[in-house]
Amino acid sequence: MIQAKQNYNKKKPKIQFFTEIPRFRQLKTAISINNLELSLINCVKQSQIPRLIQIIPITNERIRTLNQKYRNKDQVTDVLSFSYQNSDQIFQQLNISTANEIFLAPDFIKQQSLKHKQSFADLTIRVIIHGLMHVCGYTHNHSQDFHQMQKVEKYMLKSYYNLYSGD
Image 1 (cartoon, rainbow, N blue to C red):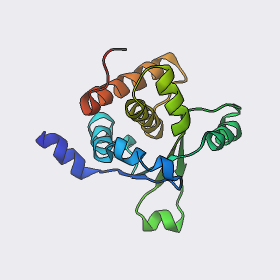
Image 2: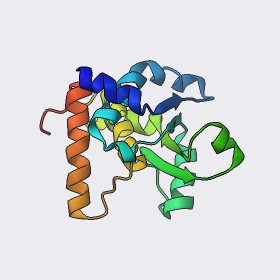
Image 3: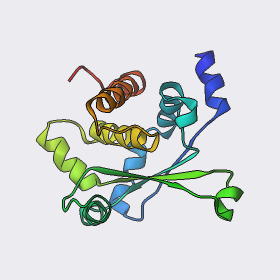
Image 4: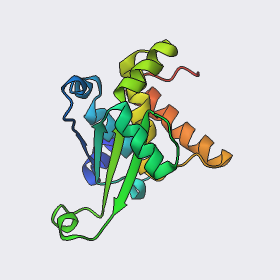
């Protein structure tokens, strides 16, 4: 555990959660930002950890629009992740080179949790971790990439949230 604490102090990502939609504010208490930060530090290569990550719950309509615009898929999805690299003055002032956004569709996640008989909080954590994997550079475009990403996700879920049970 001492090693984990040392790693945590070396390169701590800043994860922010915001929403303008009152019914989504309860999500912040369902997730542990500290656990997300620790799991990133201890499960992902240091060079892959972003300095700033924003988690933004949005409506189904909004995520569908983003999914259509950026992925050419006209459907609602649970999560979309975006990574922006920039050298603008604001990025320099914040001492970051990359900002990352993870958009969640809580209403869709709620529908999926009911459909798959999972708790809303547990599925939300799974979806956020999946989004975090993407902003850390993991993909699932090829079988090998999928298995590597899945391996790290499972480890994070089991180690920090006690959620992975081999399903």
